[in-house]
Amino acid sequence: MDGQTKAHADMAFVHAFAARTAAAQDRRLADALALLLAAFADIIRMTNASRSDLRAVIGFLTEVGEACNDKRQEWVLLSDVLGLTSAIEVHTAHRPAGATPNTMPGPFYRTGAPNRSDGDSISLDRQGAGLRLDLTVTGLDGTGVDGALVEVWQANAAGLYENQEPDLQPDFNLRGTYRSGPGGRLTVRTVRPAGYAIPDDGPVGRLMAGLGLPTRRPAHLHFRISAPGFQTLTTHVFDRADPAIDRDPLCCVHPALLTDLSPDPVEGLVATFRFVLAPGQALP
Image 1 (cartoon, rainbow, N blue to C red):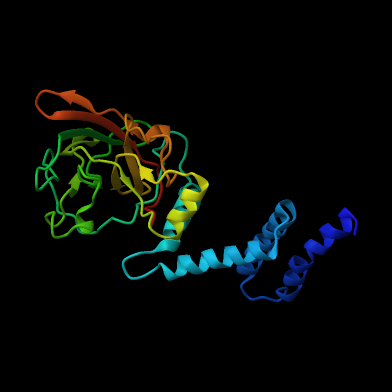
Image 2: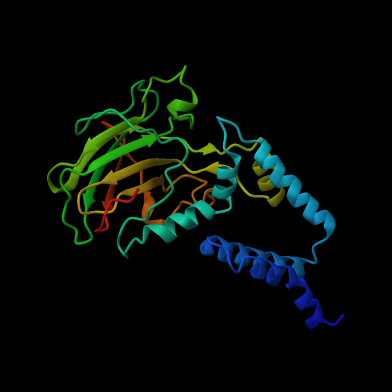
């Protein structure tokens, strides 16, 4: 069989699938699966895939499914570490140039974080190095957005969120909801967050180990900001000095999301950041 004939044979199952789904009611689903199968055909041809390769892939996907339970979603973790979650965020957010990039919210977001006044601390147990964040919320033209709803949440100095260890941290520790003041300014007091490793005790962790990929996330804080007339922004702010800053396993680091944590004789550490909102309707 020459190369051209073999290439045609490799694509036969793709063409057969397209023919069988020609009358599919869900056209978008049928077209997406046809594109996926075409990509598989390319992989089979380029890697000279074998029966044992297929069995290994099926075995891995089976393990991913078996690792899921009411406390763990291994499929979501797989999507995150492959960069698919971040890619969808970038594709669907439609952020114009100059706007703060949107990122995934992560698995530890909670609704109903307590309202805080400007300058209040979200650290309820006061464990860790003090950090003051001087923040500004603006539009693309630099005009401050007064009254923006600013939700913030983070891991503690050990890299753990409060809902990961409810018996050791106060409820809603390191979480709060603020309103920006005149000029879009507000101050959040907290403690310096630590980076942490994503779960590596399951099939996704073994995949990453086999590929030589890191599992430790750089230190960061999460924010969700909403205001009338603007797209809702969900994003990270990262500690530029974190040694893992250039190898986030969840692919969320962007140059526009970095800040410096500078020593301060009163606060311990201080940092500034400007969030630039994009005009439009609130995103779900």
